[in-house]
Image 1 (cartoon, rainbow, N blue to C red):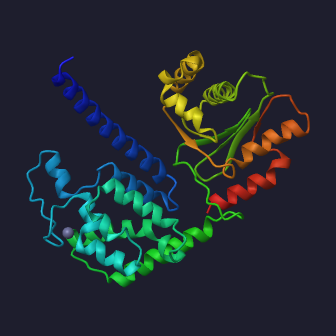
Image 2: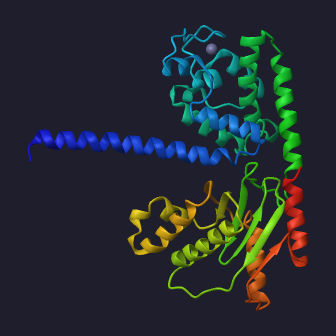
Image 3: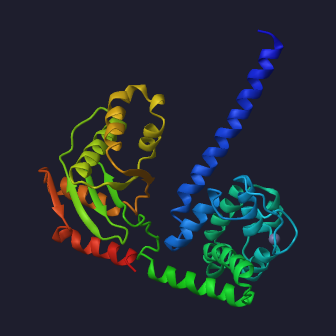
Length: 337
Ligand SMILES: [Zn+2]
């Protein structure tokens, strides 16, 4: 092989490597966005920002519309999403007032990095809680403030805006706290959330209200992954038979989602993975979410009862059995604010 070929090959892999890393980065950020402790409207806004789907001047030119791309608020740069949310004088004024913002040194990095850093700040315990938990609300305020300045020429005082953001964040956190202090992720409206653990599953709507739950006898299998796959297949078929169309599956086992995403890397499980992807196609929309032990608590509790009471008969129940009521009620009241 000549050196020319080697260089070409090397350039190609480096490039495609970078591309893959970047895509993975965006995907990971987008998954995290749905878990931001905030209202749905703000999660959707941050998701649109990460997707490059906010109407800023640079986006218009990217779509072929000849507009002046200079930021009209500060006249100091191209109006990109990154500029509006992080670099513009108007954005920095609000961040300074909140006293929580990505490091100035990070100003040169990408929008995705800045968004990731903002999400990280929400949980950074060295920062004052009332301020850091208001970060999602501040991003939203920055955007709303930009729009009212541009289109309505209204300027609210920055201290009032930040005060409002902090109050809304505090109120939201008060209403969404579980006894253990952990926040519970709820699916988007219209999507049924289904958690499963071994051979037990439970569905909840976006308000956290329990729909159905079921359990099935355990089938001995050779290894954990194939057990999880068989269980998932049973869960998916049950949901399909119940005519649920949009579903978000919560699992504690990330190797399972990894296998579904990259089935070619798991040849040993080919036939199970093929069956899973065939059932997946029957849903209007389906997504997978990795759950912590706590957030998967109800599904775990159902399974524990199967083992503890020796109740190996399968069942499908609507709305929750008496022994589950307390637990379900607790979870529903936490998320149903
Ligand atoms: Zn600007």
